[in-house]
Amino acid sequence: MPETLSELQANEKKLMKWRRRNSYYYSFLDKLYASIIRPGSRVLHVGCGSGDLLSSLKPSYGVGLDPDESAVELAKERFSDLHFFTTDPQQLDLDEKFDYIVICNSIGSWSDIQDVLERLSKCAHDDTRIVVTYYSHLWEGVLGLGSMLGMRRKQSYQNWLPSEDIANLLMLSGWDTIRTSSYMMLPKYIPLLSTFCNRILSIMPILRHLNLVNLVIARRLPVPKSDDYYSVSVLVPCKDERGNIEDAIKRIPDMGRETEIIFVDGNSSDGTAEEIEKQMAAYPDRKIKLVHQGDGVGKGDAVRKGFAVATGDVLVIQDADLTAPPEDLPKFFNALRDGKGEYINGSRLVYPMEDQAMRFLNLLGNKFFGMLFSWLLEQRFRDTLCGTKMLTKKHYDLIAENRSYFGEFDPFGDFDLIFGSVKQNFKVAEVPVTYRARTYGSTSISRFRHGLLLLKMSWVAFRKIKWIN
Image (tube, rainbow, N blue to C red; front, top):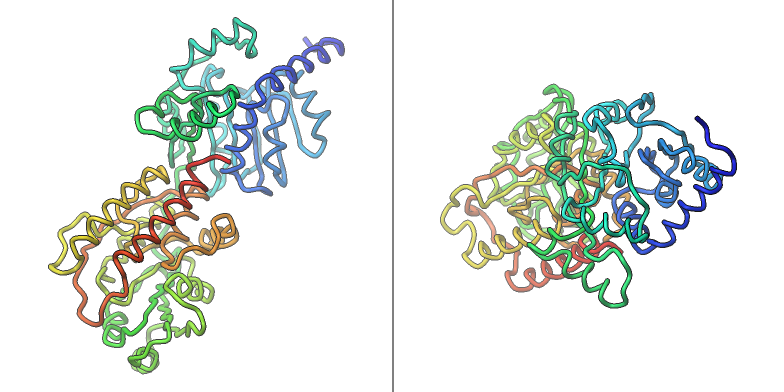
């Protein structure tokens, strides 16, 4: 039965009281979601409450649903640019597509979670991300006590679900989990102590299991594409690689509907550019482009210049030294085509390497940074510096549009793509490659100078991804 006007107003005051009383916690949630969701997106918030979180995300089109009529009326009054409806999620029946679906602290109140998640899959397109936050089940007693003491709003009975159960329910409902994480060890503000607990202790192994907020991000399970669905652009950055040019053209396989090869010459002094032009004439049946890097410096600049002229639906980097064999490229393409991942990263650290392919200190450094970045980025990265990487042009353009978040800091080009993919919540998949010794030229990698650069980039990842500002 509808509530009277006075009852609605009384409930509205209560809702605002609880949010003010726990403003530190709610402010953190706003920041967490803002770090995940791009402003200007289409956002559906299921269990929207009084609308504050949805409004903070600055959507181009925002819809909030909640079974609490008081909360919905308050949201309508406060945020007239958004759309709010009193709806039981168990009865959800929307015929609209959204870029993000937000479920904040409400999933445990549903009597049939799988049914709601299946209903939500109808609101998703291929790139939709569903973002779920929920209280850790370890906090059930503490939060119950807080409700008894009047420190938080009393809740009806809830299912206390660990992240593993939420991920399993998502899988059963047609969703594919991308990553899970946890945050916030102290939800009340105590000067210095809250910062120490939530910035330092909350990210430490073992201790992080004591955090209050669990996060799960998932995508809709992809449908595999046909072999000719995508065209492919293979980017080959090169400097002083004249002896490898013809071999690269011969060995790069045809993939998808069409394959183009883009050489980006970094002002070579050994005649590499002339060799590329010669081979373009010798292989008129291959679609080959030559880009001069000009006043640009480094592989990262070469990658950006090459991708700017690429016409393929799929972009892949193939190092000109051919130490990661081009014959492995179809494995990357198949993983992307079949939906195994959206950012396909090569790994040289699975199969045995040829002698002299990687020096011992380089090997140790790669293993160390692989573990470090897996912890920082919360997705598996066994090898961060393998040159072979693949993603769609649509997803690369999204990374490029949001590059300012990290800044122009990456001389290699690898971390621009890695950080960007993690920031945009792309599904990462790794493909092992057999790493071989060079047959022409010499490496330009400096173990110590570039090692320091990697540490600098680790700090960037820590500040921009690990910490929620």
